[in-house]
Length: 119
Image (cartoon, rainbow, N blue to C red; front, side):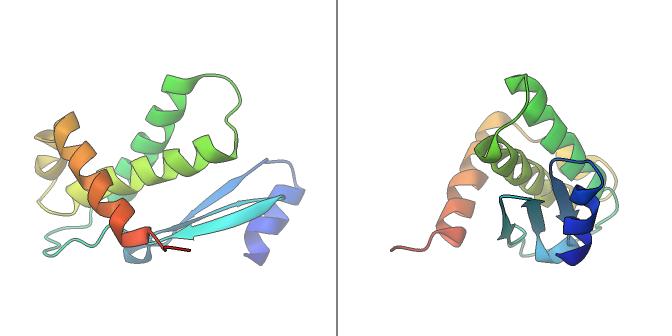
């Protein structure tokens, strides 16, 4: 987290740190959050997962326009995380190529059950 803080002190408003199979951290000066990767039973090939995460992240932000707020950044990270989970389940682009919106919606529901902590 110290590195993310130093990066923000140099100009960026937020930093996303991909942590591979451990998920990601989103940091900005007002706070941070850490989310796990989606628990995939059978990882075939992690090649391209980071690129898929970035595509999902920026794709989500592009659909919302303007300067993203904290919640939009968190949702963009989750979107990237979920899409990357499809990528690792096959070789090359085969894991992500067949994904439909309904697959992503189902995976989001499953993910929210994994990260949910009842207060």
